[in-house]
Length: 343
Ligand code: PBG
Image 1 (cartoon, rainbow, N blue to C red):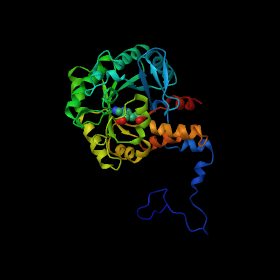
Image 2: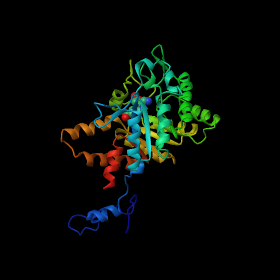
Image 3: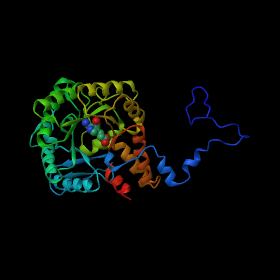
Image 4: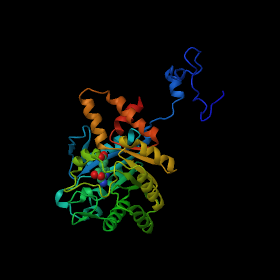
């Protein structure tokens, strides 16, 4: 085939309409077997990480109103859920705690209590389902009386003082048995500080899944309902990224990699597919995407109205994240998708 300048093979332009067609792309779409053969991207259950909400108590589950199908679970029910997920082939979970108001303070002290809800949950899961990869969130907001990811002083979020607490939190999680810690706070320098502290304490095999490009997003609304963790004043724009910025995501990812991240993450996913794509071009590290609560809620709401085909929209949405370059996807749809992929 003769290609004109700037043309790649397969991109040749068809001749004018009165001449026979040389290229008929539809040939490759004729049957399912053929489509499967030339498919560029696939979604598999081992790509998925299942986020779960845990709370104190016994045999209780509370529905999260803005996330139909998601629950806050007490530890005993959480163990059942983890077992079920593991049986479905889901290899990893991410844990988030609901903390009582009287345990919250400005410095997030409860976040590094070695007998706190998360360390207890880690130990119980590791005993019940030792094979599942356990990822724990490192951030102050579920523990913060201010609903912020950092310590507040005169309306500002302190960076380095917060990092010191995050380090203690990560160490408490590693001590309890977490496989990966996942800092979601967006303080500067926290990946390096956590890596150094983990290594110094001998936790060299505990990995870091860094929320590297985390945007200040309205898509987190339902999650904050689930954890009762909405900011008490202002917003998170002095630490989470501006939705308008793409190059800055590359900078953040570069810093986290230099500081020792094992996996980098983009969050949210759907409105930031270009960021996932760009980051994938920049690093050989695995790239994760967080299909966040608002993305989940939108699909559930439209499906409840009967306006969309829920299963197809879920699969298409998650596939778009894979196509953009995500290797891993955190998604509240994990169990549903595992069931769909079984068929
Ligand atoms: C907080 C945190 C948030 C989410 C994960 N960790 C919310 C926030 O930053 O306010 C959001 C997840 C979701 O919306 O599904 N450290």
